[in-house]
Length: 87
Image (cartoon, rainbow, N blue to C red):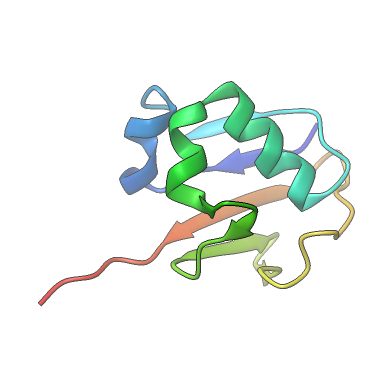
């Protein structure tokens, strides 16, 4: 079962969890399952149906932000990165 790792900036929207294992066949499916389990993440990750530009997604250290239909293997680790803004 794939695992999603959340950065500290997103954990508050997921009950403080840093890692979640969930059933999903694709990266997009994993994100949809994640937002169903933790609805507060939906508005943080998406603008409507579009992934926000400030969210990075890596599968086993490979940037897959533009490959949301990428199939996941049971041992894949999906890492979400939230860009930080500041001044």
